[in-house]
Image (cartoon, rainbow over all chains, first blue to last red; front, side):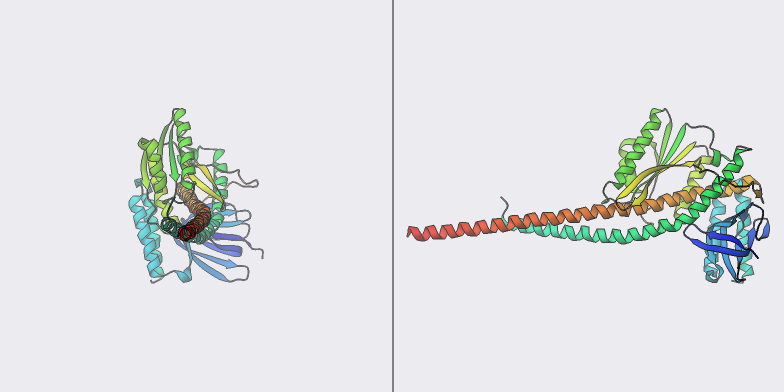
Length: 132
Length: 289
């Protein structure tokens, strides 16, 4: 089956670039799966795990925070503030992320508080889900 | 005429200066390499971010005016200039040329009857601008304690700029920094940050479906884009700084070398002149007997 081009980029580097069979992304309104020929969509990602299945059927998983997914005719681009392979994720790192988000929440103007609060909840959820 | 001892001291002091400049040059070379790779590493994200923004902005143009961060406040009377310079000197004209660009920009805006505010990143620019534009400087951000610039360095700055914008403190924000082209060429550049300069839209771009409200996504995306642009400017600036420092230190080392050569020649001539003079004195003394 035809794959599509997938790229995961963080400010410091290009983390993943290549053909993918499917990508499961944690959208802010719920997870969604991107396959070949997906309609153009722009979505906000909640902190969570992006699961990439490449054309050989291999899965790689990345923890993503502060991300946007941009699906276009020729592929999917995920812009993330932080992106790390799940293998490198540990409790300390996650705690740091939670701490950062708490600070962001404290700084955010009132009308955006809900958004940040939501992000914080997602992170805590993720932490308990990973039993760290 | 300086005595032999004076000349010897002079040579020794120039030599030790040369050692220092040589060491600084070498440090700058290795730091430059690191800074350059950081600039390179930021490129993919920058390219993707530009396309996403261009597509979004292109999509917005047809209908509503979009959030103020994208389309501006509509006014053009109050300007904020973010001036990024180095924290240290000994880097040739690096800081001065950014400051000159900042002064020219600020003065041109003032001549047009606009209000200008300055936000200085880096100590050197602040020190120089304070002399002429002190009243306009609203703050100085010190990055001296920051060893390597990461995205997290730029975020608080961007947050502050966005907050000021939302509080209605300015209409247009411009970022001044030095773009790194090569070791010998760093170009002081002005980039408009708010409303952002946006490239042409991709040709076959289709209208997006938005999972959330379009505005909600932009509210999240735009501050990030601003933070990223500041981050990128800081990286370019660091690379430019070390590039400038490297070539400045290179020519300083060469100058010191020439100076040592000149003084050594003079030292030898003086020494020989003294010997000749002593011989003449001895010979003429012997003849007189």
